[in-house]
Length: 323
Image (tube, rainbow, N blue to C red; front, side, top):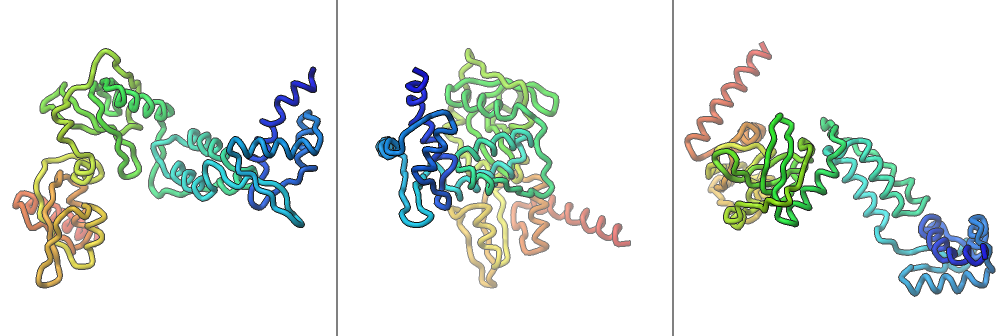
């Protein structure tokens, strides 16, 4: 009876061997496969393994035979190729909203999608300059709860890092500058409207099953790409239609930041300008100053004045430090 029970596990055990022990550079012969099964307490005849391999092929396992010296059977295709797994590992390593201990756990799970031999190549360390990782151990559960609320059209309540409690209607999730944000509608303070919150700064998130989302009329007019382009580093501020003039070599830089749907107008001297909505904030003004005169604000006058004031402050600070 025990032998029969072991035989029931044989096909699953063989599939697992192919998944964990074989790849293009590591193949196994039928005697080796039989030996590995016997090591797990599953006795088998070598001839039966050929039948088992055919059965695995029938259910979708791409098991290939390499003939000749050093040949054998191996699993040719998996759900993820090694290059794709490396990309996912790099992405997990770069996400500062994921705590370090969660990063290790996620990478360990990704390693299970490769053979043992290839998994060693996934032990990569991506250095992200100046980005401390989140200390919020509940962030993955927070993201799950927010997606549930969005999918079911329910409001959420949460405690934010600024010490305040919020109840909002969640609309979308957005990724910007290495952080994850919730884009939501709030009407508990004036003016009511769209707000965004960093997910790793949220805690005690609760889906309010008896409170459907509100603000649908505003949501129907909402464009996430436009919203993200207007907010530099996700900082808010008064919105203006700003005309920006740039040096010729900055065209691709501006396209990367504002997109190709903006109308870029060439000037006689090779410079170009364009007009786009911007929430004018410190990060936006600092972004302009960072181009050291190769980017200027043409209009409106209010934004020009704020930029000039910032320029004077930076100049006096530089002079003081040099002195």
